[in-house]
Amino acid sequence: MRDLVRTFFRRPAGIVGLVLLGLVCLMAALAPVLYPASPWEMTGVPFSRPGENGMLLGADTLGRDVASGVVHGARVSLLIGIASALAASCIGVLLGCIAGYAGGLVDMAIVRFTELFQTIPTFVLAILLVAILTPSLATIILAIALVSWPPLARLTRAQVMSIMRREFVQAARCQGQSTLSIVTRHVLPNAISPIIVAGSLTVAAAILIEAALHFIGLGDPNFMSLGYINVLGRTVIQPAWRIIM
Image (tube, rainbow, N blue to C red; front, top):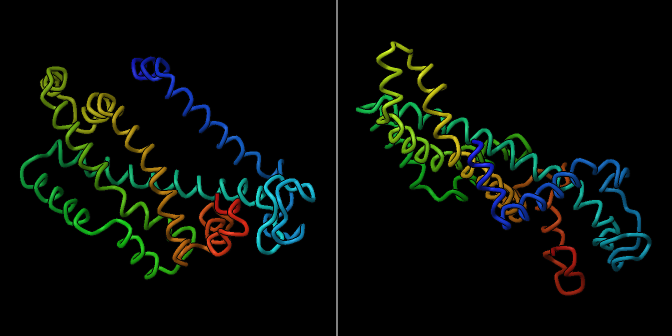
């Protein structure tokens, strides 16, 4: 992990990305301080331009502050992205570890189960799950997690199978350590780096899926999110393109 951090900070692109991500997370965390009022409150004239009536990004079709919606919406979008990525990582890492460590018929059964999920288009399956469970914040997180775990499972399986052949794992087996001890103390710590990278990419994919679900009318209308703002702006792209941007 120390080598991973050292390598990461040697790359300017990684540092810039980390700074931008930190600013977005800070903005989302300080949303109640920056904009104490509700993002649903109508505070100006519809289609106000940026800077008018004290609105940084202007107003939407109903006179609501777009900047307030972006800041508060970032909290919801990040919540959905992080929660669904964590849930997908738990499922994928668990199944990947079992498949990679057990091998044989267990490995084959898990791989076939994973491939079954991967044969179905991700977004189509997410639409189906949200439509069946009715749109809400919890069902959107659950649906995104259920369609996002297969790549993490395959990656974890490959990492575990590679590490299982190394000498320190064989030595731990010879010492009589339990399976759980070998996996948690020797295998997972050495396989975690690519899993973290894949999990961070899952966060971005989850936010895009949530925005797409909102775009087709399957988002939770009770929460302001970045996807909801895009839905508001799609019908007024020509007179108020700044809303969707």
